[in-house]
Image 1 (cartoon, rainbow, N blue to C red):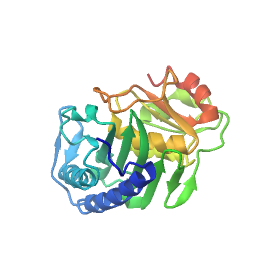
Image 2 (cartoon, rainbow, N blue to C red; image 1 turned 135 degrees about the vertical axis):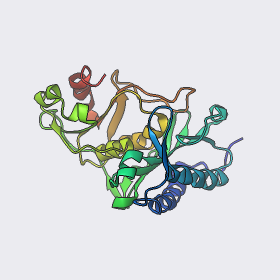
Image 3 (cartoon, rainbow, N blue to C red; image 1 turned 120 degrees about the horizontal axis):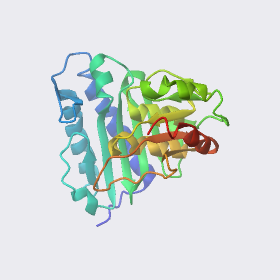
Image 4 (cartoon, helix red, strand yellow; image 1 turned 60 degrees about the vertical axis):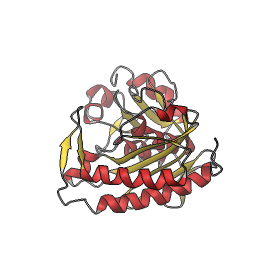
Length: 265
């Protein structure tokens, strides 16, 4: 059964309002030592993550009851695989930053259709930055159009990623310029879409919820997010994990891939 309210721009507006309210909820826990524990993969989760997850599940699924649901903090029952459109959510992307008092954590939400994102929101509440995109509708930050950088060479290209990549001597010798470490992967990739850095990287292991919204932002801003073979990512599969990734302006993506292939595997 199709949902009548399925236009990507309409969904983008829904994601914007949901992300903003979710951000306000997360801020009510921020800096107040929320109850925290560790999941089986040793990553932290807090009562704030779960509160935001519950809010988004109710808000979004009530608005689009025929969409599937995939969230980092909700048990995956695989029923989503039967849906043409699916919400993919990370209630707080960058929980370690959130718990440590960092300001780069985000609320990341996407609508995926037939395996690819068609609407996305990455909201950074502490910095009051709302990044939005819809398929064919461009990428936006607080109402202003954004685009990837015009960097055409890896020589001098600003690169963000985990410390093991940013500070790697082979990366620096290739001509890349390391930047500050960002503990939200969604925010890290969104920085490429905004043209604040030229290249974003991730080692193998990120999941759909880390990537889907930022992927669309990069695409709509004129860039690409691919694996090391140059393939775009497909979402809402049975397995939600992805290999090592790079994001960069379209003209730069191949040279970046060749330069970083061995380093970030």
